Length: 341
Image (cartoon, rainbow, N blue to C red; front, side):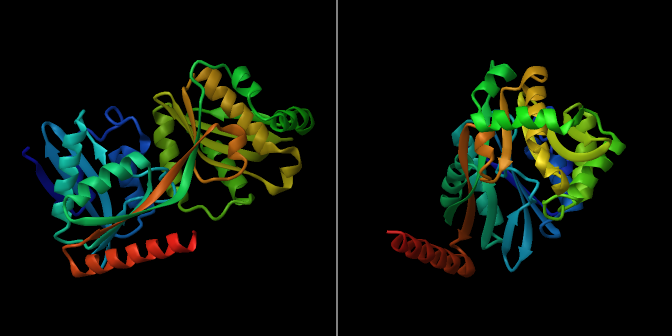
């Protein structure tokens, strides 16, 4: 199989070759060129992009990285990235995908000794580690997070809600009467609503936002596409709860949620979630709702399926630093297994 490959050191050069990474070609928000460009602009994990592409049989494989120095690289991702992995255009067979990734591994192996990638699904982990293994890279794989989802295909909100824990349903019923929460769900970007989101977030238990500029740019773009779902809840005219979702291609993704600590007695987060789920199921008719990354206990009340997410560290055994890194990583894994017996 003939495979052509190249490396781009900046996004401007890569964009000219990135046909197939647009919204109408990639179903996932996190697999589009604009997602990586926005990450690089507003919250880059390192200042030096390293973007690898391979082409075979009419399809492309892409791997978006940043160099961190001393022969090391990591995923071009931020805490807004709910998944990361190689991206493909067209409809390549698994054999072709593997061949393209092996070509990428060989090409970037000329300048890198190790790569750190997260968060990755098991499917992407298996595909990537097999392909890189053929190019003399070693891998360590660690479960470091998870993704909670619920399949709501063919269900009404009433059917979904009836399957939720009784305590959750009781809380929403009781607090809904008491709180007097006025909820508006925006599907287009609204600057006043965005101001309310920022106000609620700043007065919540949440950590400092990674990049307000990144999140606003995402909300503006998704609003223009009709995919934004920004829920704002007010009590007596004061915004107390906010949730940021996107809905596209039958999948609703929960990106951010926050409420004011001062309103906690009214359980505004649960009330807002119920309204957002109802909108997604009964109006948007999604088949899947995705709660992003993290194993927060409350997610199990709203979701049904927990899927592990992994961190992958790759070591180029054809370099001294990579060979040494692989030995250290494998020794560390062995010690951990012995301790856990």
